[in-house]
Amino acid sequence: MDVSVSVSVSELVTWFTAHNGIFDRSALTFAQIDGLGWGALALRDLQQGHTLFSIPRHLTLSTRTSSLPSLIGEADWKRHGLHIGWSGLILCLMWEAAQGSSSRWSTYLASLPITFNTPMFWSSEDVEQLRGTAIIERIGREQAENDYLNKVVPLLKNRTDYFGDEHANLHYSLEAYHIMGSRILSRSFQVEAWSATYNVDTSQTPPHEDPEMSLDKHSPQALDDNSSDEDEDKDSDDGENDDPANVAMVPLADMLNARYDCENAKLFYEEHFLRMATTRSIRRGEQIWNTYGDPPNSDLLRRYGHVDQVPLPCGGSGNPADIVEIRADLVMSSVGAKCLQQASPRSSERIDWWLEEGGDDIFVVDFSAELPEELTSFVRLLMMSDPEWAKTKRKSKLPKPKVDDAVLSVVADVLRRRLAEYPTTIEDDEALLGTEKEKPIPLNVKNAVVVRLSEKRILGNLQRAVTTRLGGDPSESKSSVSSRKRKADGTDADGHRAAKR
Image 1 (cartoon, rainbow, N blue to C red):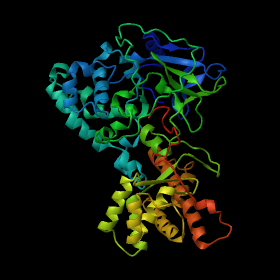
Image 2 (image 1 turned 180 degrees about the horizontal axis):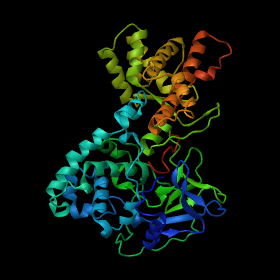
Image 3 (image 1 turned 120 degrees about the horizontal axis):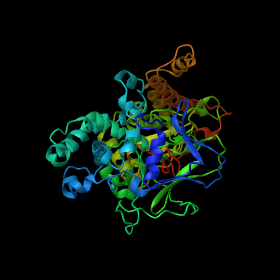
Image 4 (image 1 turned 60 degrees about the vertical axis):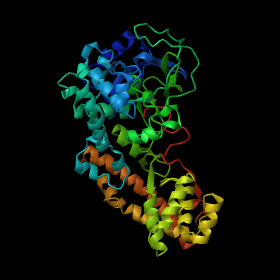
């Protein structure tokens, strides 16, 4: 994890302990790690359940702990829409930075990075390397700038009592807004509200928890993605974890690196503290890894600016969690082509019904080369005759995901169309990476190639399985194109739910 050079790590730890943070200096240190920036290393052998450090809740930075929302007033805060989405927290970070040394978080904020390798800051030429992936639609730069202009700027102009007449200075510029937003995207945790009986007067020292207290099994939840404020508002009824007030910056916890299937430490809740503790034994000199929930490289690149490359069971290296998204409109086009008919009001009616019944408009495939049940069911829905559709609608039950040659034929066409959305072929990308030692590739381009190559391999694996099945090869395993369910966000049961976004 990158850290700004304006504040040394020793200064950061000193600030942390001066504000009642508990840090086991005998257990870990932060050091520069090749290719990973700053990370945590074990100074001695550590057993599972060892507390590395504990962060007082008042030292987390959120719209709950920053004084800005209360200074502005709830009515004005909500009138400008700052209670929805990330804009409020971004403004709090900008305001705290503008306070300089008078802010409780001045040292922490000075330690955070000001440059990022995420696509948000790429040139248009580099972004073009991501064509075909879902990353481009989720970069969110345009949405962020709309929120800045429509929410933040009006408040800056209306409340010069706190922001001054020169509100457009460096602390409140659009560039600063993007930087603070990227800090939140790459480093924040979901920290739920603590007990109402806890005194949030930060002038008082919260009681220290017993370091030997058993681990709290309720782990923090991660913010989903760079969704718009409007989307987050619509999802706010799903649970407390959708509350933007739960998003918080957590000093020191955000300095641990992560890698696929390497987690050996995790952040746990306690009433007054968040506690980083080991989840398995760690040997002296080993890196202490947090978890990002093992997301695919497309998410890692968009959120954190890097990709994972670990040995794959099928050979080579990459990220075993990689996935590919297939849009419903692409499936519609293939069904229309195969059935010699164009989309009609009737197909629109079926799609509306599909969504009302809980179906999704994105289908996810991975390295297993298995058809998602949802994709199979959706194809069958679109291919139904009118009488079959009427019967299905009356039953109010999604079609069974039965795989036959008609479905496989449509899927084969979908895969062909999906692969054609990438600017290069598998062979092109493999050749490009193969010559990297002799001719180094710019980091952004390399990361883009790693992401799109993995996605194309996933699609190619499924394409071969479908083609073989259509050809009637008796050696083909029936399971290779069987249907199965997978969450559309590409996570497992707890997915990205136990760590940073």
